[in-house]
Amino acid sequence: LLHQERAATHLAATRALGAGRRHLFRRHLLPAVLPPVTRHALLRLPAVALALASLGFLGLGAQPPSPEWGRLLAENHPYAERAPWAVLTPAAALALLGVVAVTSAGGVRWPRRAAAVD
Image (cartoon, rainbow, N blue to C red; front, side, top):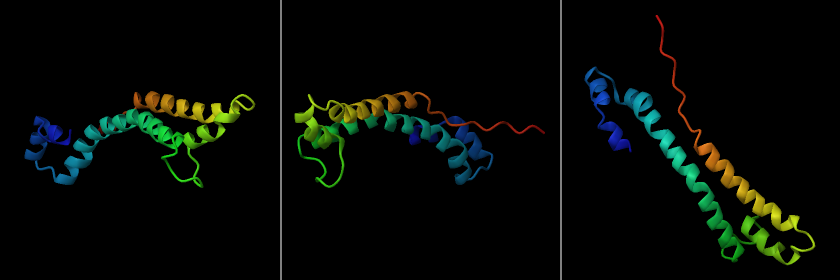
């Protein structure tokens, strides 16, 4: 994405006008590349969280002193009939993480600076 943006004609024109590397990166490249990369990371977050939780559920995740959603689900699974909140809370947290990540990925925009008026 960065190489594609560097090949744009408006960057060649800006470079021809004497803009330095820092100016090009800060004013043109970073605002063009950062929102798609952030959006991609936010869309991948639920899948990664679910994969880590499934590994923790199988006992292949983090070791027992550290809290983990998958291990919480596995440990509380036998008590699901007596205390359903013990299983529903980590599951709801995973679902909420997915909803928030996907919803916020649609709103990732780079704030545009207002043009200077002389």
